[in-house]
Structure formats: C-alpha cells, structure tokens
Image (cartoon, rainbow, N blue to C red; front, top):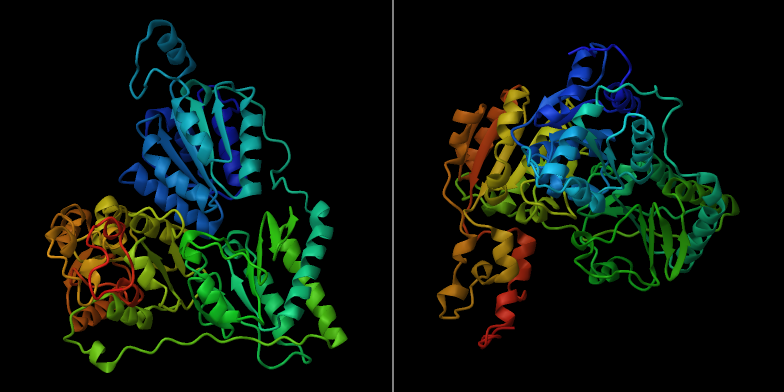
Length: 599
C-alpha cells in the first residue's frame, strides 16, 4: 500500500486537501482505477477519513448526499463509466439541492487512452470516446476536472475544491490511473470560499433597509425559514434575528413567528415556541397567512415546486432572500450574501427597538384538528394518517427522520420534528429511492443519532440493498416501508380517480382502476433481512405497529426493517382533500370529461 517511490504524489495531494476541508467519510464501490488513492488513505493510520463500501453506486451516492447535508462535505469513489454512469442521478440531485459532494472517478491510464485512439482498441469500461464521463458531469457540477498531468493536478484540485466551497455544490475529478503515483508539489496555504464578502456589505444594508420598509408598511408578517439556513450554517443567526425582534420591550407581545416548507423542514427544531408549521406556500396560502396587511419574508428559501405548489409566488408582499441576492417585492439586490443580510437585519431591527418605532404584529396558523379517537383504535387498519400520527408521538430528539418522495414526503409534513436538522428529504429533485441509502449517510454523519426512514414500497424496490449496508456498518437504522403495492403518486398525477371517495364511475376499467404499470411486484419485504441482516417485521394494524415500535426502542443497537401494509387506495389527508377536485392528466384528454354531476 505504501508509495513505492516514497515521494509525495497526486494521491497524497488529494488526500491532504480532503482532510483539510473536513472530509471524514468516503462512500463508493471499489475499482482498480481508484485503488491508488484508497491505498494511500488506508496507509495513513492517522487520517480522519473512513472509507466505506456500498452495495452499489446509487446507494453510495445517496448516502454521500445525506452525509454532506449534515456534515458539510463528503466524497465518493467509483470506477470509470460503469461506476460513474450510475451516479448521474445522485449527483444531479446534489447539484439541484446545493449539497457539496466530491465525486472521484478513476480513469484509464494515459497510455491506454493513446492506444485506444491510435488503434481503436476498446479497454474495459470504455466507449471509445475519452471525454464521455467528464462531459456528462460538467452540467451537474460546479467544477469538473480531468487530471492527466501530475504537474497540473494541484491547480486543478485546488480550483475545483474552491468552487465547491463557494457554491456548496458537487465537483468532479477524473484522474488517470497512472497519475495517482506521480510526484507533485505539496499544498501551500489553506483553501476557502472564493466569495469576497466585503464588496456586498453595502448592498446587504440596502436590502435590509428595503425589507424593514416593507415590513413597516405590512406589519402582519411572518418569516419563512429556508433550507439555506442549514446549508450555510446560519440557523443560530436566524434565531438571533427573531430574538432581537421578539424580545424587544417596545414591540407588541404578539411575536413574529416563522414557518418552514418541505425543503427546509427542521432547519429549526419544530418544538421551538415561534414555529408555526411546515406548509406549502401557494399564493392562496400566502394570502391566508398575511392577507393585504402583511409580508412573507423568506430567509434562505427557494421557490421550488414542492415548496410553492409549482406556483410563482413573487409579489409586492414577498421578500425572498437567498445566497445569490435578495428580492424585496420587485426590487432585486444582487450578490448579497445571506449571512451579511441577516447581520444587517439584526442591526436594523436593533435600531428600530431603540427608536421605539416598530409596530409589528405576528400571525398564527390554524392548527389541524387531532385524529379522532375512533381513528386511533389499536385494531384499526393502518393508513398514512394514523401511521404518521403515531410516528410523530414516537420520535424523540435522538432520531433523524428520512423520508422518500411521493406520498411519504407529503404525509410527513404533519409530523413535528423535535430536533434541529432532524429531517432529511430530497424535496426538490425527488428521486424515488433516495431515503434508504440516505439513512446510511445520516447515521455515518451523526453516530449518536438513529436514522428513522419512511419509504414507499415502490421507492424501496429501487435501493433496498442499502439495508444490507446499514447492517454491515453495525447501524441501528429503522426503515418503515409503507406497502400499498402501487406507485401511488404516479397514479395520482395521471389519474387520481382510484383515490376519490367515492370514485367517479367512468364505466371504463382503465380510468376506474389503478393502471397496471403502476402495480408493483409482490415482495415479502419483512423477510429481506434474512439475506440483508437485521430484524424484519410486518404490521397492518395500529396495535401491531405500537408493539413493534416498543420493540425497536428496547433494542437500540439493532437495525429494523418494518413492512407497514396499508390499503391500495389509502392516501395522506391532504391528498384525499384534493383528490375530489384534482384533474388527472389522462382525465383532461378523455372525451367523457368532466363526468356528469361532478366538478
């Protein structure tokens, strides 16, 4: 494993830079093209970097993504093409949701590339086009470097890592196998973000002043705590702003509170006294929240489809501040760093308190009624609502909830998360299968926490192998698989009729039933632990779920896989309320639409 020529080389350089920026975990699938780097790390008994293998590249990619969300950065290692191609989906998700992941792709040697070009010989894992891998990853990374020269390698490594630190998004290294062991210079200086914050301070002050002016004109305001508070480590600063506002002796006792959305759920603990709820901020919801007398102030919030119901919510009563600028109504303040903006807001609100001129009042959301006692009987069939109600009472501050796309993510918005950063979901990219391997990464990031995964059976089919990773790592992760036998969200989008109560009678089996292509193969999910490891359980009634939850708490060192069987037509309450008026894509094109007496 030791460097044969005992000289400082490219593998050493990348290893040292990874350590410097805080990489402590690498996920991946071993390949000979990256072996020199892995061997260099393993040979150093003092390195903080742990190398963990995964069942496949997709599991590695999603685990790395979740780990980086909580710890700030992670790294992936794969081999050329056959390994890297599988990661297009995971790296795209990290790019869209601003997660700093380093993808390290070992590549054929320079000699092999030359032979391939001159003779047409195809080596293993090659297509004949030497730039195929990097050209695929360039659009979904903030820097992509093909390293074929040891003398240039330090500059390429440093520039890419600087881009990642600046933009909080993935980067890509493609390193020729014969370059790893080639000598190069040692690092000089420390890498840091390329942002020069001093040039944006005055613009941040202007944005803060405009924000105060709008809030004075629209005093019934509410904050929207966005995902960038977590991405840039600004939760404490956001709470400091609220503290300045809400503890002022001159402000009304009716404090200004905050909401979150699917993307930002748990950026602040949902037990915080100023937390009002996790909501979908459609225009109608904003009108309900602030009316004509208030403003919605998004701090680090993104206008993604899941957060805003696919609506453009910008208006003269919205303030949307993110790391690349601040929108105050129709005004835009470019290049403002979110941290500077928060600092300037704190200063501005402090001055208002001194001037005793702050006529703000807060807002309260209408609380959802609790489940009826009849819905909570131990013999009742399980469904999304009583499952999530039970889960919300069972979760504790030592748990981190990880949820997959589709109905599980929609239903989970009602669960109160008791700890900051206690909820992880891919709420913008929405790749099904994310949650189970993400649970692996969550546990690696926070070893003292327990990852609680909720996933639909369709998404579970994609990445079920991650349960084997969790057992192999000695983790105590719990995976609840909500098994209704269908791709529920896909059916709902195309034709929600099977979820209506009662359904419309089209007298057409195609429109009256779940489509065959949304039906899933029948799996004995709870039995998979016989192969993967851990404890498998199957429940279909509330009392059975409660017994299993008690067993899970009694076995804090064991990983569990729980198959939660629910009816095929069961949906979360919010979906059930929409289904009667929702129009599926296939229904619009049907000549019998709309049906008589409906809509």
